[in-house]
Every structure is written in structure tokens, then in C-alpha cells.
Image 1 (cartoon, rainbow, N blue to C red):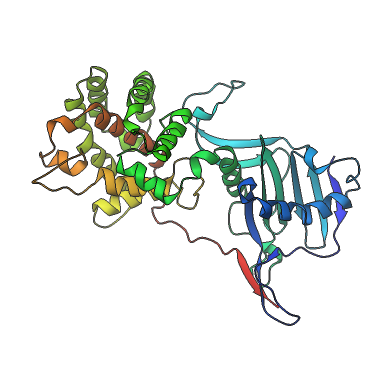
Image 2 (cartoon, rainbow, N blue to C red; image 1 turned 120 degrees about the horizontal axis):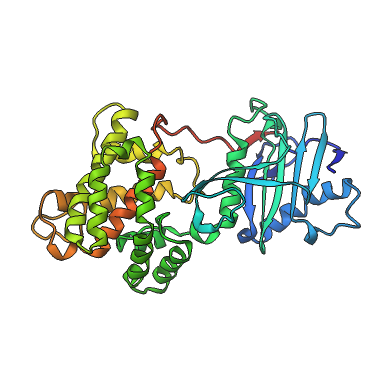
Length: 391
């Protein structure tokens, strides 16, 4: 059963600056910290969460190390409801395959985490929230006391369930989501991306190869074999997407050529056709001129993931991948890798119409499948504030 407690005063968050009495102070009223933040997470957990645990009267019998999760809902009258190790936690995910009720869901089955919810628990927009949770040996803390912050409307203006889903996804898939700009630079330079269609174990290997300075293409054989096994059900899935349905005959031909190891034909079909898919989505979801940049922006924001940096679809970097790798510029006198432009202009060298290029093209199509959801706005909404100034 949850505990009902009364706080001495409403929590505001944590001070960013030091201030003397009467001075101005910036307050962090919304924050997400994890085990990778080290002492910062420890100091946060030893603050308000520990105080709340004492107020429940369970501090003597329940050690902090035994807490798998704690959810605290704080109301404006200073009363709070506390759940400790009793919640039924439900993750709403976008699946990569058909899954029957009762079937085990594995990491490779998760394309994106849409939300994290608690069975039988509602979180009103006008209450403060604190959620501490664990995933294996890792821990995390998310809190939002914005409804009590001065100068704020008094209610959350974002989807708390989606936000908690982001936090859960980050802690669960931390190795895939914690990639430095330098590492992304190296990976994109190879032409590879952490495509959702690549099994988690191979995505981790891609990162390990980049970090070790090894040849990433050595993983091509394993990635291709896995992709070939999945292609029949991928075609079935693509047929359900209105933006891909009109392109399905050519996608089917490309898949047949790939299975027959006719990589030249597969590449010649796919690289121009990917732009066609982007144009199909753009025509139904945007206005204006469909330039390469606007096609990419509409496609990526159309998936609704621009504000979810912890999405496994990696929208921000995938936008860059499409712009810099798929739509790569080329020197007509010295064309190199296969891209939309080098293939469509007929200048790509034959040896670049390879198994690697065909594999990457099919993985691009699969990645786009999860973004191209019709009737979504192409313009991302502005991010919310996470600090407030007070005295």
C-alpha cells in the first residue's frame, strides 16, 4: 500500500547558484540524473528521497539499497503519496515485430519507447513528481517540481508518461544512447549508423569497433545475414504504411535482388526510391518546396521524435545521416561512395554498388518506416524550460 505523508514545505528543486539572503537564485526544478553522473546522483538521492523515506517511517526497516523504485506525488497542500517497490511498471514500446500476448519481449524487439506508466496510478499535471528507479546495477532519478515554481503556469505542459519513458529508455539502453560527438563523426564517416534494424549486440559491436579504431565493415557479413532472414516480414510491415505502399513493387524487386546477391540492381532501385518515399510523405504532411533538406526534416520530425533525444531511433543523428550520407554531395570527377546523388546521376563506380551499400539502403528504408507516420506535424514543438529564477 502507498504511504501518505505531509511535507514541511513544498520542494522547489536544487540551487544552481549560491546566493546570500535576499539575492537572486536560479533553481533546477526539473532534472534527470543517472549512475553515470556519479556523486551528483548520490547527493540527489541522499537529499529529498531520503527525507521522504524517513517520513514514511520505513527508514529503519527499508535500506536505500533495497529500493528498486520509488514514486512520489506531491500536491500543493504539501501532502504526498509515496509508492515504494509496489508499482506495476508498464513500458509502452513500438515493436519491431509481431508479438503475441504473454510472449517474452527482448531488446531487439524494441524500436522505440513511447511511454512508461504505472498500473492504477494517475499523475495530474499540477502535482510535483519524483521517480527513482533501477535497471540492473544502474540507478536513475527524475523529478519535476515545475508546478510549484514561480513564474510557471502551475501545470505541466508536456506528456509526463512520455518523459518517464525517455528516462527508462536511457537507463535501459545507455550504451547505445551515450555516444560522443567524436564517435558519431567516426561512425558516420564509415557510412554506418546505429540502425534500429541492426540487432542490439551488433550495434554495441559497431560502437566498440569505432572506439577501438577497427574496421567496422568486418561486421557487414553478420548484419547482412540477419537482415536477409527478416526481409520477408519487413515487406509485410512496409505494405501497411501508406507512404510506402505505392513503392512496394520496387521495394519487393530490390529485396529479391538483394536475396540473390545482385547488389548492383538492388542499389540502383533503392537509392532513388528512398527519395521517392520521402516525397510521398512530404506531399501529405508538409507544404512548400520539397528540397533535400525539407524532405529530411519532414520525415524525421514526422515521427514525433524530435524532442526525444533518448529515442532508440536517434532522430537528431538520423537527420544528419540522411543529409550527409544518403544525400551526400559528390565530385563528378572523383565520385566515391554510393549515395542518392551519385547513383541517380549515374557516376557512382560499379564497385561501390556493393553488398554494404545495399545493406545500408535497406536499413534506411526500415528506419524510415518507424518515422513516417502520416498526419503528424513536421514542425517540432519548442522545448520546455527547466529552470526558474526566484529570490
